[in-house]
Length: 129
Image: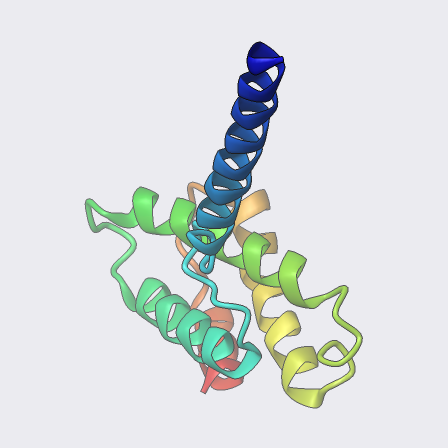
């Protein structure tokens, strides 16, 4: 009888330990790897600022490739988070942001080794401000 109680107690302790680990692990996931928080306004401002910095960097700069890679990852994360969100995707601000992000992502996908055309930089800058 004593062995059954100990096994039962051990199973409960392991269950509580597993639940505690899961709870701790999930609370640590408040922000995504991209830095997006889930707050549409804050994320939109952060993405806009990051991309304005990226498009203002000289094309010949040594950090261009890293910034381009980071910008593409940020665009993908932002769009995948907010496009399916019906409370956000109908907003004019989201439509404008999506247009700017699609333009920039399209250029990076098709012409990754070429600098951004000045007309595209001006248009994206205008849409992000």
